[in-house]
Length: 231
Length: 344
Image (cartoon, rainbow over all chains, first blue to last red; front, side):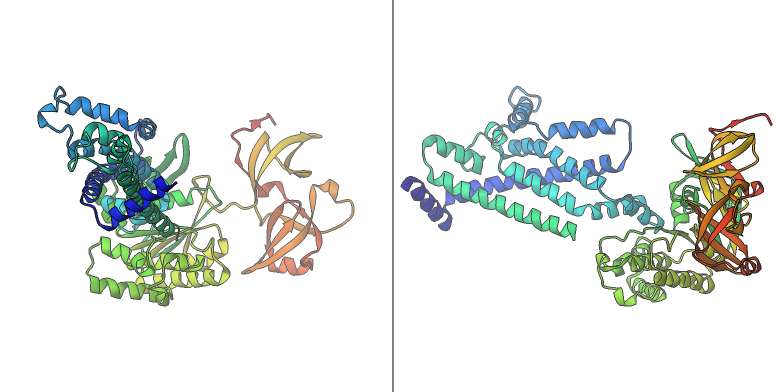
């Protein structure tokens, strides 16, 4: 028990003193996670919106595919991206392997279906009368689309927040594509795994507490968003 | 001419929900579109509001033939605004809702403020300007939807059953607004309802629809029935043991309408059951000009319309037990798709 409490209090000291290594690891994690979430939102929201609002042949197939991709394991995505960016891959010349960019690409592929599916679901729940009302009031197609997006905004924001929560806590992609290089591609989860392997728990516990705090913060935001949506 | 339609059809899947052979609507008039549920009123309003395109046929608006060019449809939608039966408000303030049509038209902010205030004044809702949508009642929502439509300064206003889901107080208020808008703003109005009294109060012209088609008058007392022969006489079985004798060569399931003006009311007497009359009870009396509308419960509600003089002569009042007779000439067979014709 004293082992745990010692680690816990030492971790608190690390956090209070803003330990440079801890700060660097958290910084890398936040940077790659924010970047991949931003990219996934940029593509996933329009994709989910288009699939949600348009009726086309094969729509059910696209929705099924997106739902299937939600369950894709991180190691499978990492392997897939690895096959493209490793030295022998067709993008090998870009030297992306074991860089933050490689992690961002992998995480982007991981959460693109999350953002698209949740956006699609949010759009599908929007009352058809919004579209009709905007049209009869003289809105162009683009203005009508904006109305629908606006009405679905809480659902879409929840999709983005959930996607961020998914990437900040994943380890497979960060480890396999980032390589866990200190100060460069070492994220909170890969650092925790390494510290565990070394039998050093203080930094791992500190990182775990930061991760839990971020997770708590994300859930608070989600609750606030959902609360506004229900108002 | 405001609208002209020829051979207008709207088909969903394999079902033709609207088939208007000819329609002419003039500018500056309040038209009442009357018909029961499923008669195609809302579909016709959607076509006239350019929110949907016809499956077949031609529609002219102010003597210009309408095609499916999105730019043309957008410019037309900016002249014609539809107020839904259950309007939905954007999840923002009352002000922003009314302002929406002006913003999409690129109207300057100062003008927007003025027009929004004027429109809210017209429907008596200026005090609600900064309220959120969820703070409004059903009647207020309906009035706000009218203000939102009025702010767009439309040439034509389409109302889809504007008072169907509001209380009597709001109903009177909304009818007054429609009347005022027509008088002061010279807006053409097409009002879809199944309330004949409302149509008679507001509309200058009435168009009847039934089963997607124009009809000479509105049908009332519409029932599903099965025509069967007993002792050489065809009888329409409506529900339970309610049967009416009629003169037809059809047998089997039909849809029929009984004209309220044709129904006769008699005081309850002995031995009348054999004469094809139905026992009933008077449930409601309403005056309609020179006529009295009587709602009779014969096991099913039956609407009867008789002259005021006849009503006074009959000396009947609410709760009285009576007998009604539905003469064959007052019964019209509407849907006979599944019935069979027998030689007479």
